[in-house]
Length: 242
Image 1 (cartoon, one colour):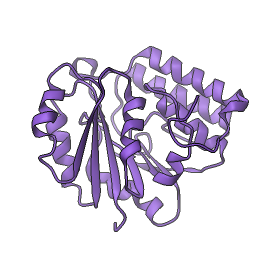
Image 2 (tube, one colour):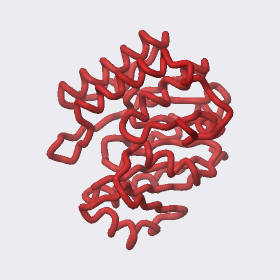
Image 3 (tube, rainbow, N blue to C red):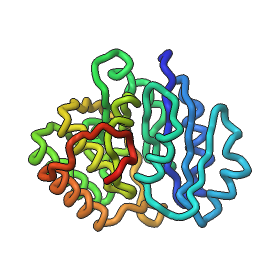
Image 4 (cartoon, rainbow, N blue to C red):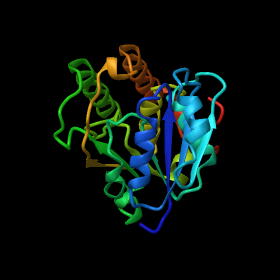
């Protein structure tokens, strides 16, 4: 993989896993830069990153001065990314960085501009039933509204040609980022290729943060963007006026 990959890691209260996920990310053999964005953690993650965040290779650490959400952290990371391709990496241990090469390969080979890693295609163990059903509902709703064929819209592993991602007027600061970026891609006719990935779900008491209201927000965003004339791609970069 000769092209550099920008790995954006949004982090909020992941003191138990941040060191391990960084180790696993840097074990991946792809050429990369790593951008960690701490979203005002209060459990020691912030302090750990200040002391140890640059122990591994080309790692850049950004800090939010207030909790803004996963989408905001991704956009902060994107604003300083320099790789030809970008992938999102959660700071927990649910997703395996050893799979980067397979996920990004369709982009590097000119077969796609966007690739989602599908937990469904990977035939993995399901997370708690409500999370599984919620993810399936959001995906099915997106397919219905946008005539898509996705199996796993809420997956963390989303890889993009950076020029495609930065051209989208992305505004959503919380978990609704997944719905917004998917809707805007599909509205522009940009095909999303899916590849199977492995998945190791964790429970709420292990730190899982998404809640039912986040699923409702994603459904609302999908509906809003589908029928809003202002949802079309504008000539502005990520984080533009919403």
